[in-house]
Amino acid sequence: MFPERLRALRAGQKITLQELADALSKNLAPGEKPNSPSQIGNWERGIRTPSYVEVRKLAEYFNVSLDYLTGRSDHDETDLAKLFFDTNKALTFNQRTLTGEDRYEIFQLIDGYFKGQANRRETATFYAQQEELNLNFKDES
Image (cartoon, rainbow, N blue to C red; front, side, top):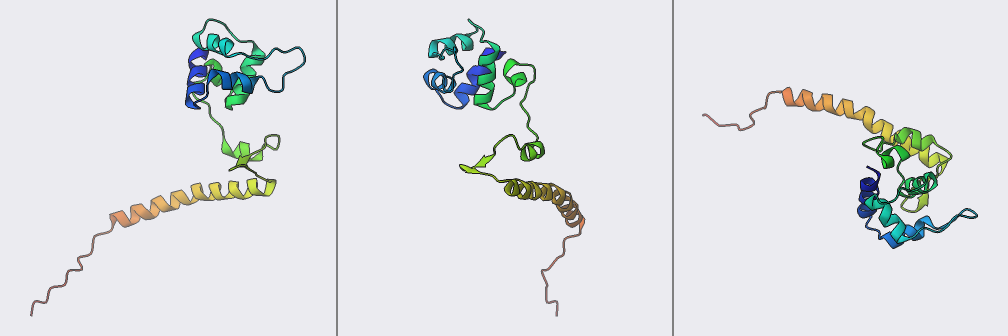
């Protein structure tokens, strides 16, 4: 499962093996060797298995969970509410870092949207059940 997920994530972002190797090789810990395109290609083909450290770097790079990357879960799900209030994680929008106030206001907008959605459905149902008025007046005199 891991090789397929890795290949799909890389292909989905349209990056080459070299680009991924370069990205993973940034900020190496002391004694850590840089990644190579052939190494990553071997992971994608299932010829070699990466270490835990390498899988963690991949998960962080692609912003997915380890469970998703290793096939323990079928989808990677993030609760936006938790994300907005996780102060350990910087959030950006169009290269602009969101402040705590930005996060709170955006959360309120999303929350209001979903609360209002129920009202919009009820209103639409009410009007859909109304009889249609015939406004074609005929002068019968």
